[in-house]
Amino acid sequence: MIVDPQTSPRLGRALRTVLVRDLTLALRRRGELANPLVFFVVVVTMFPLGLGPEVDLLARIAPGILWVAALLAALLSLEAMFHPDYQDGSLEQLLLTPHPLAVLVIAKVFAHWLTTGLPLLVLAPLLGVLLQLPESATGVLVISLALGTPTLSFIGAIAVALTVGLRRGGVLLSLLTLPLYVPVLIFGAGAVDSAAGGLSVVAHLSFLATLLILAISLAPWAIAAALRISLE
Amino acid sequence: MLAGSQNRVQCTEIVLFGVNVAMSWAAVQGWFHKLASPPHFYVTAGRWVPWLGASTVVLLAVGLGWSLFIAPLDQYQGASTRIMYLHVPAAWMSIFVYLVMAGSAAVGLVWRMRLAEVIAASSAPLGAWFTFLALATGSLWGKPMWGTWWVWDARLTSELLLLFLYLGFMALQAAIPDRRAGARASALLALVGVVNIPIIHFSVVWWNTLHQPSSILRLGKPTIHPSILWPLLVMAIAFKLYYMTVVLLRARCALLERERSSAWVQQIVTEQIALCHPLR
Image: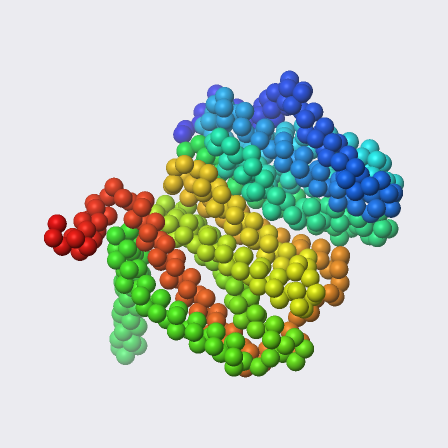
């Protein structure tokens, strides 16, 4: 395709357009926006009810519970990334633009993280208080979620892109995504655990940052290829 | 004068070498293209299967006899070490089959080669069974050794996650109605898995060393004695041959099914019917 520089917008503008469009759409569907957050809170509430209210036990397992709940909340919100666009046809328009798809999907994933991952960061300290997480670990909890949840969005986007054309992709999505989430879970929960125990968290956070850099640099290509396969 | 003729000889040699390389490359390519054509593969694989199957049976018999009756017992672990001769080859195969599967899936994705897609699809259930076998034998071995069926040991855990990756591959393939689209989607998933397997494995090792140090009992000696190594190798080769036999059988069957409307399948079916019912 020959691109006319006069009429076709530059890549930066295209990225901004995608980002603003996705954010606008997400903000107009506020109910859907709140669902993963409510889910996060409800799941965390179930654990003390199932395990008993002993303070020591809760403080011991709080990092794991918070991280697993964040993982599930991220999983739950994944389908919203491409599915509505697939149904109204705008996903195909995205594939037809003259800009590299692998770059455009970064804007989509980022918009998705802003609307689903970022609110988790705000909510997590409150839930940490509910679960008796030591106050010294709260900061590390937020930092680890800030480094980890974007990776979850990028990895999950690959699986969503692969299953976007399927009628019942939901259960399949968890089977495809959760095994790939394991490293993020290990280092994320490990960081909070170490902070609660008064140990150094540099190694854990460095690993989370490494995973994020790997995800940003490699996942967009896989997402673009998966979208092309799904919409072929 | 002499130097000039030497030069010429050298030049000719280089040219000849180049022609040779080009010809053998063409031969390899020709062989590759020929093998990639489904009817040719069907016939060739049909010729290989009996030999592969027979050598599987022989090696499996030798390996099982050797490892179950002849190989020496471990001083501390007793007869339960013998499960190692199944466990270790199965664990090796679980990774090997994933690599073969991802490799052929990549070939199918890049060159759109149908045979590669069929090989990848036929490998997945076998790999999943090898992974399950490694987990089950590991668990059986763990009961007398660790006193429990399951330990969140790094290797067992990453083996379990590998099983999930296999299941995801098969589930994605089954979920997409169009066979070829399913093959391409699951091929991409397999490649994502190949990138992630080392990351998952090392993060599990890290996690394990943090949470529970030194509960692991491995083979007592630092190096494996030849009397244990040889039956183990025989079993490993037998497992590989078994995989090759069954994957070729499955691929042949899958090809017949996928290409059932093509002329060569119709011809095979007519021939088979003529063989089975000579009077008709």
